[in-house]
Structure formats: structure tokens, C-alpha cells
Length: 241
Length: 269
Ligand SMILES: Nc1ncnc2c1ncn2[C@@H]1O[C@H](COP(=O)(O)OP(=O)(O)OP(=O)(O)O)[C@@H](O)[C@H]1O
Ligand SMILES: [Mg+2]
Image 1 (cartoon, rainbow over the protein chains, first blue to last red):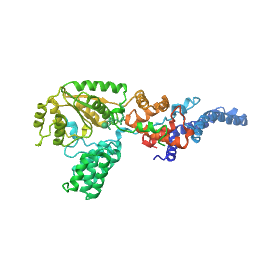
Image 2: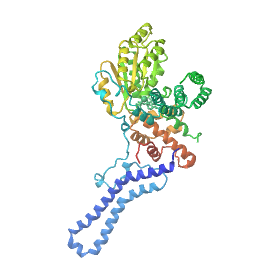
Image 3: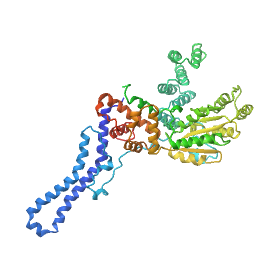
Image 4: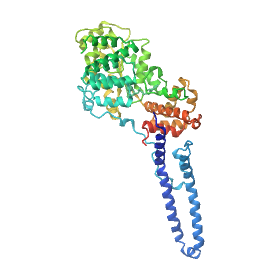
């Protein structure tokens, strides 16, 4: 099952991360303002000396004013983290309209970190593909790239692939692998005759004859499968080895 | 939990391929139509290709479902990679002939010639990247002899896709590329799926903003969309049971969509 609380925490972190550039951007902008404002005043030195006290207070006011301009909207969305109400702000809308000038300089983060589906790739072992004149579909004729198929099975949970892999292992005498994949296939789709049969045959090959019989009996009672019945018979008569 | 408003929509988005669940999406229907036309043309073999999760297997299942009403069609979901087995199964299932002798290509073509169907029988091969090149060559010869018409799908990743494209743009192949859905198509896909199952209330919850987010996350890939929505509705089931006051019925929560995306790995967090 889903662990909702953990998921919510991960989501919160993700949100903070994706807004970090904005927050940093605003922070930098604010810093620059603080640095620049007194410098601009510096050029007017005489005035500043004369009414230094006045100026200071008005400086502070300026800064205050600007800071309220900038920070207010960002606080708003920070607040929305704390409440459990849904965040309806799209990232693009986060930057308030009042902060227009520095907008370009703020690094716009990639909000959605979408893994490319192509990264789930079958290892590139396909030299045969590019050079062959005939229609060659397979990278490796004698030995299928079973690892990549297994990876794909893991990714898609496609029972067809599972059966394919189980069958492959059975044919290659890897009975414990065949057993494993038939088991996985059965748990995805428990109505595939052949998968149950490979499962039981692997059991016999692994010396667990009784378990194989039991499995088959159970499956026959559920499915009425002829193939399963004839396998059970041949196991019982000892003709299947 | 099983009586939840969201458990049915959740199960709709299990990633299974079943011709009955096919939904009509404009671009796909168009492709499907041209696929059906190509099937009736002689000689050429047909290749369906495209990135994972773009609906190749789905289209093949749909084709199988529709054609089998009128015509001899055989579908191989799981490749039979052994050449002898492959020819045997074809001989038996298509031409009703179970030979005891070793099955050579010549023998197979003889068997095929002895049986005549009003239309060339069709064989659909999913996951054709698993066949060896020598078996593919035999398949081509069978097709050339007009004994059987083949439609195959190829599961390829990005880079291999390009190679495949070049490879199959020869005279003997007619190739159809499937692509990810656009935002509009993805909306149609989701809506139709929900409406088909009478989940009207839930269908109404998807607004444009939700769809934009979902499309951005899944890049319009049908399989990714299935996974995302499956876990989204799992979340909704949970909230409905534990904090039902949080659920709004006029729109999906972006936060929950993102949480589902984190869960399925679309967002790395
Ligand atoms: N037209 C459609 N109608 C309904 N569902 C669809 C349609 N197209 C795709 N899907 C859904 O998308 C999922 C993925 O599609 P499918 O399995 O056909 O992809 P694929 O191209 O065969 O992928 P792969 O290359 O991994 O085999 C399916 O489980 C199905 O639920
Ligand atoms: Mg497929």
C-alpha cells in the first residue's frame, strides 16, 4: 500500500526544492537593492551629510517599502505549504507581477523532473541491426538478451513477457529461474495454463514432486484445465521426468 | 475502500491490454483505419513501431478482435522463438495440419498451398524484436509466397527506433509509427475511458489545468498516464476513507497529482 504520510513529506521537499530558485532569486534581488540604494545616495554626498539623520530614516522606509513589495507574495505561497489546502498556484504564476524587472535574471527552474521513458533502455548490444542486409530484428541470434526482457518484465508487469521468460529458462534448463518467473506470472495473471504448467514442471525438475502435484490439483480444481490434468497424470505415472 | 467512488476509476487504469478497452482517439483511429486498409493489400508486411507505451500492442489486439469476425487471424502475444515450433504452430492453427515430420520452410509452403482461403490469412506478431533474424527471414519468405500476411510490432527504445525506421523503410514493409498523445488526445483518452465505465463524476473532475499538468508529467505516454492515474486514484481512495473533507469534487488537486507522480517515479523527489 501507499504510505501517504511519507509521500506527503516527499512532496513537500519537492515543492521546496522547486521553489528554491525563486526564493534565492528574490533574496539576491533584495540584497542587490540594499547594496545599490545607499550607493546611489552616495553620489549626493553633501545632502547626505547635511540631513543624514533624515536620510537614514527615509532609507529605511524605502527599503521597507520595497521589501514589502517583494516579499509579500512569496510569503503567501510559503504559507500555503503549511495549510493542507491544495496548492493551486502554478509555478509560472508564483512570481508576482510587481517584480518585473529582475524576472529575466531569476533562473527559471525546471519544475517537472520527468525521467525520460527512454532511459529504461535495453542495453545497446545491437550491432547486427545496423549492418545486416536482411531484415534482422534481433541483436543476438543464438542467445536472446534475456536480461533486457527481464528488466522490461519488471517495468511493465506484462504477464506475456513473464511467461516468455519462464519458458525461456525452462527450455534452457534453469528450472529455479523458470519456477520464479512462472510464479511471478501466475501472480499477475492466474489464468494462464502454460504458466502453471511450467511452474509445476519446474517443481518436478527441482525434485519437489509432491508440491507440483498439489499445485496441479489445486489448479485443475479451479480451471478444469486439460493440459494440467494430463501433466498431473504423467507425473503420477512417472512418465514425466 | 472497495466501495469508494474512486476504486472503479483506479482499476480502469491498470496497465492491461484488452481489445474491449480500446478507446477511439482521432489520430489513433486514423492510423487504425489505414492499418486495416493495408491489411487487405497483398504482399507487404506491416510494421507497427514506436516508443514503449504508445499503444502498439493495444492496436494489434484491436485489429485481432475486429478481423477475427470475418477472416482467419492468428495472434502471437508471446513470441515463439524456436523456428520449428513456430512453423508447426502456424501450420496447425492456420492450415489445420499437424505434421509429424520435421517442419521445413518448403514443407510449410506446400501445406499452405494445399489450403485455400478466400482471403490471405493474417498473423499478428507482438514483440517482434524477440524473433531471430533467420526466423524473420522465413517470415518474409512466407509473406512473399502470399501464404500469410504478417503484421508485427516492434518494441524499441529511442535510439533503436531510428535504426528500425531506416531498416523497415524498404519496399516490403509498410510501417506505421505510433506516438505519444498530445494534451488534447490525452484528455480524450482519459475522458472516454472514464465515461465508458460510467464514472461521470470523476470524469468531470479533470479540468484543463489538471490535464496540462498530467500531460507535462507523462509526456502524453499512455502507459505513464495509466500508472499515474492508477496511483492518483489510489490516493483518492485513501483520502476518501481517512480525510474525506479534503476532497474537492470540482477539480483534481495538483498536489495529489504530483504526489502520485512522485510515487510512480515521474517526479524524482
Ligand atoms: N487506443 C487506446 N485505447 C485504450 N487504451 C490504450 C490505447 N492506447 C494505449 N492504451 C493503453 O496504454 C497502455 C500501453 O499501451 P501498449 O501496451 O499497447 O503499449 P506498447 O506500445 O505495446 O508498449 P511496449 O513497446 O512497451 O510493448 C495499454 O495498457 C493501454 O491501457
Ligand atoms: Mg507492447
